[in-house]
Structures are given as structure tokens and as C-alpha cells.
Image 1 (tube, rainbow, N blue to C red):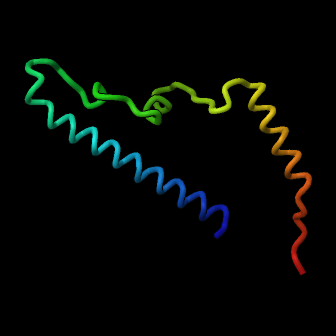
Image 2: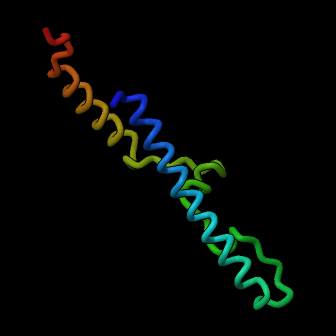
Length: 89
């Protein structure tokens, strides 16, 4: 499996999971709609998913601070310097 293929598989799985959650929320929305009276309700009022917050402009940094991100980058560089990328004979 190549890195590009692995990336495509992960992206596809993530998209399928997101679609399943959106369908579940839409089903819940239509299920409760007759019971909310005259209130104007949107599916996003039932809950906003993490990827929707990112799309709305909120930037999510899983490492927290810039210093933590720089530390992870430093560790990655150290790791890649120890690897031998010479082709096998």
C-alpha cells in the first residue's frame, strides 16, 4: 500500500463516517420536527460536529500551542534523520 493510497482510504473512511453522522442528525431532526411547535429549528440546532466548526472558520490545532507544534516538528525531523532511505539491493 502506497502512502497516497493509504491517504485516500483514510479520507474516504472519514467522509463515510461524517456522512453517516449527518444522516443520523437529519433523521433526528425530521423525527422531532412535529413535536417542537412553532419554533423554527435547523438540523444544526441539534448539534454541530467538529468538522463543521472547522469549515465555519474556527481553526483547530490538535497540538494546542505553537510551541507544542514546533516540538512535534522537531521530533519528526529527528526521526527522519535516523531513517535510511537507500533502496534495498
